[in-house]
Each structure stands twice: as C-alpha cells, then as structure tokens.
Length: 237
Picture 1 (cartoon, rainbow, N blue to C red):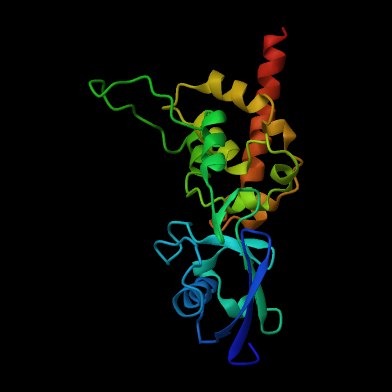
Picture 2 (tube, rainbow, N blue to C red; picture 1 turned 90 degrees about the vertical axis):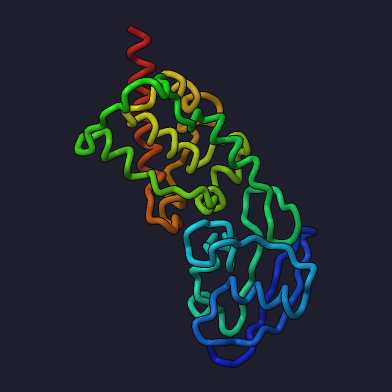
C-alpha cells in the first residue's frame, strides 16, 4: 500500500460503478473497506456479513474479479497500486449493490438430491459408522462446505450454462453418496447424471482453486462421473 488513501470502485446492481476514497489502515480487510463506505460515505450501500472471522461465508464478494471471503482478505494483498474493485458474486441475481439472491444456489442443492435421505426413525438404534472406511474418509473430505457460493461464482460452466447444478451441490451429492447413513444412492445418481448434472463439468478447476476452505469439488465431481457411468453400464447389461 503506497498511500494513506485507497481508491475503491464498487460495481453496483444497475451495472454502474461508484468510486470512493477510503482511509487506509493497518491490517485492514476488504470487508472493513466496504463497512467504512457504508458507515461514512454511502449509508444506502447494501451488502452481507455476519461473523467477520471466516466462519459463515456470508461476506463473499468479487474482489478484482475474484470471488473471496472479504473478512479474511487483507486489502494490502489485493490492491492494484492503491486501487481495488469490489462487486457482487458472479452467477447469481443481484438484489441490491453487493447482496445477491442465494435462492438459485440452494435450489440446485435440492435438484442434485444433495439432502440427507434417512430410513431410520428416532426409535431406532443410532447407526454405527466406521470412521476409517474409505467411503467415510471420502465423505468427510467435503463436509466442511459452508455454502458460501465462492466456487459457484468462480465456475465458468455455471456462467455459460444456467442449468448446471454447480460445484457445491455436486460436492454435497458426492458426500452423501459415500455416507453409509444415506439411503438415497439411486436418487442421487439419477439427479446428478441428468440435464445440468456432473457430466457438464469441464474440469477447469476454478472451484477447487478458489475454495476458501481448501475443499476439492472438482475431484468430487470426477467421482460422480465415474459412479454415474458405472450405474449406466450396469443397467445396460
């Protein structure tokens, strides 16, 4: 950071841009910058945040064209000189300013059957799970997804194909497919092999590259491709 003033450009919902001069501070995050603008320059600015410590993911925005958690992104790491451009997450409808409508993102979780399919009731004994099994290890690999939609915003396949279920929903489907407690294997395979499913993925890897929790949706999607192909050929026998 070369001066005590930051040149901040906000990409607004109407497609326009607004520029602000923001004081620079030590250990300042992108979320701190957005909050300063709302508190001191434009009280009408809309954006989301909650925990401020990298736990909830609700503060995700585009920063110089890259989806990031703004609470964990230090402004000094993303400046172009003394300038930065901040916008709403890509691939989702904008409600206002930096706040996007997350409904399409979560609707695709449902469409991918990425919800638990239980068979037991509260009266049944608790099912035992072998935590060392290959399936459990595979399921655990994606379990820390917090639905921030950074991977969805990073995905060029989503940008070009609105029907594509997206990396987060498909990763969750893969987690459940490997969960011994889930009874929805057939439903999951059918959902993720159809229109907009895993075979639309071009394996570009942006989802994995930008995941703030270091998850690997691309590998999960590759697993779904293998399992749906196996299922298809088994049915054809």
